Amino acid sequence: MADWLRPFTAGYHFARVSRETGYEVGNVEGIKDGGSITRNVNTASYESGSFSYVGTLDLGNDLVRPYLDATFEDGTRESVPLGTFVVSLPSSDVSGAYSEGKADMYGRLYEVASARFTEPLRIAKGSNAVDVARMILEDAGLEVIADDSDYTLSQDWAVGLGSSSEDNDTMLGAVNELLGLAGFSSAKTDEYGMVLLRRYYSPSERKPSYVFEEGRNARFLRQVTNERDLSDVANVVLAVYSNQDSTIIGTARDDDPDSPTSTVSLGWERSAKYRYNDLVSQEEADAKARELLANQRSVIRKVTIQHVYAPSLRAGDIAGFEYPSAGISGAFTVRTQSVTLGGAAKTKTELKRTERW
Image: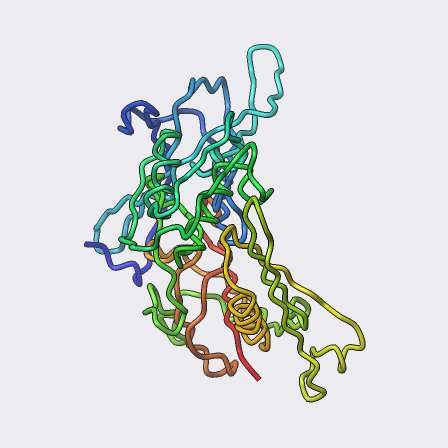
């Protein structure tokens, strides 16, 4: 087992993956160094990327899986997958017999992010929300790993054509709305393209997947960006519950003059709206709005770092960051990662956490 805290030299290869079987069927030739992969928990399809190539690239409907091939000082070697992607070829330059082009890569969730239901999908009251989400994904040809859930729908539910909500018009939109109702995080993918449906736990309940520590063997560059952001903090929150027959809107306001983002302090309303395809009482909707507003009373702390690639850390995970000489310490959620497919896979990572006042 490789020790990823030790120095290594890096190479890369791209495996070709059969869409039908999921097996790797060979390597993709002609790929140039210098591509990149981006992971972002705030985008529906979670991950994307690009690479350049020489010659022709004919993958049919197969997928690609980039690998980082690491060789350590003690001779240990390990190859780790960086993701599994759908490939699009938007352009190429040709000069006689020579050609080169750029390919865009999209994570497997891209396939359902823009796919719409061709006919209404109606789901009966009492159906298990996570099981339905799994069914939608598997019917679209994706493999799924899901946590157990006993949450069932409190009413009949519809997605696609005939739905009362525009948020679940796409297959992925419907999946993520169902997951939200069940207390799950939005769907994301692992390195092999498997869709992960995981129960949501607050950052304080989760252990770090990786810890960055200042010192002789630090795996991050000393220069970091440290930000505190209040720009997205709402002082009015609407919790909108609706079905085909009715809509209930819960409301909560922050009018506290001691709050730096209240309607009084700012002098204007900055609202946030959350939609739920379910039906509750007015009291329950107002309680949900108050809960969401309370969660707003905080500052977003962002720390952006550059580091050597860490295979155990992906967007959405928890990272420990101990940089005492800069006054930064504690656990953060990984919001974004940008991985360079060259050198030692230098990675730019944005760490984020909520700090309440």
